[in-house]
Length: 116
Image 1: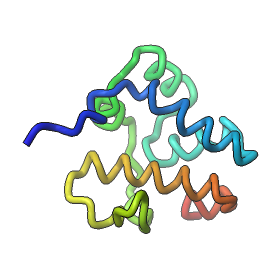
Image 2: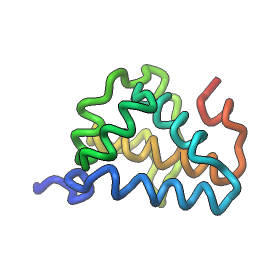
Image 3: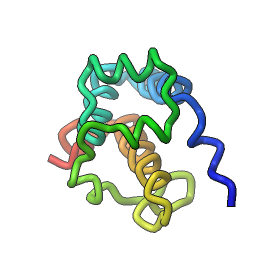
Image 4: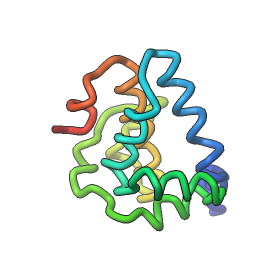
């Protein structure tokens, strides 16, 4: 089976979609960056470098400095798909990020989104 086309997309093409969704709901870029940092370990400089380099979504997650071991606590349904039931590890990471962004957009406190 061919890899999903999302895997080859630049993360810089996905990031603005997340940001627009959150800003429409009154959330900030800093909150999005904090969610990404929690999940992947990227600091601000690392995230900006990835965005500038047009790194693919697959490479973004493959090169993540420190995937959070608590990421398995991100559960629920995104786009009709149960996050914890996704078999492909990369797609599960993408869905976990989607779920966290959705939770922020729905007004959940950042501490709850970060599973604090």
